[in-house]
Image 1 (cartoon, rainbow, N blue to C red):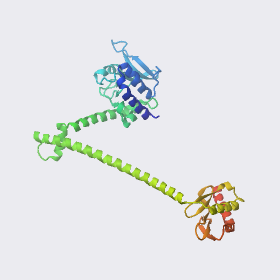
Image 2: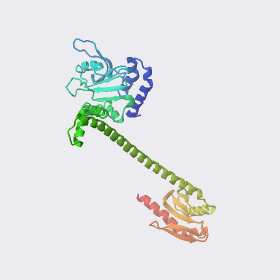
Image 3: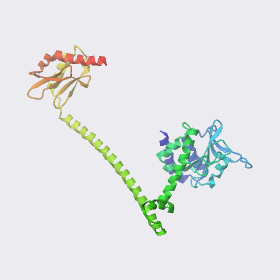
Image 4: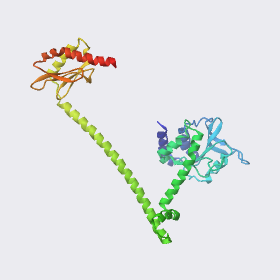
Length: 362
């Protein structure tokens, strides 16, 4: 099971168990320790994960952080845990703020086992930022968030790589929050920015009110159109897949229908035995097989339809045997009886010899 599946599975576990998890300690055991484990760390090895790491801060001695992920004897990620029903905010991140500058850890996580907030020191070195650079809800985690989370996995962890994307993640997240707020309730400056580009006169209070409603309506309509376009694209692709599947099924049904129409006669089987008798002086008879079709009975070398030795046309009023020259061009020869097949013995033997020469060259 890959990392994505493991995280999705953990999200499902949280949804299933959260109503039975009633304490902070239970939250740690049921949700947060499994999360650390899925990041590739051995939660029972204090050299990798240290519970209740002591971080002395000034006059406050003996204060502890819930978990510290370790590397070479030093903490690299600090984790502060809360009960899953407790919302996360700046106030309950106060311990992390205090611990951050006393250790060598460059990342910290505030979590209640459902929401995860990742912090670093983008604004001021060795001082934890007030705003997280990466957040997600494990019960509704997106694929792109899983890719970002994967960077914290033990097998992929690289400090420089994470720091290089942390700033982008932080500002992208803040912009998305801002845009969502403006889309739902457009502010005056936001509305004026667009109104000035389409309204030729002064933006009065009355005009601003009008354009606030128009802006909100336009945004909603644009979002609906985008969703509709994506649905159409998805449905079109689905239709194409269904058409391809139907075409395959139709072709399969056609082959089955054709197969049911093909009847191998005793005469064809007798002719097959004659050809085998001719060829056995040069090759093993186990290499000779036949395939019956509606219009002819083919005899093959190595059961390969690209190595046709001859074709027999025995169903019509006129019977003939189709032999092949060195250019694989078929020549039809009339026969009165099956015994006439022996007249083409040299040609049949030469055909087999030519196929084997090509095989040797390859």
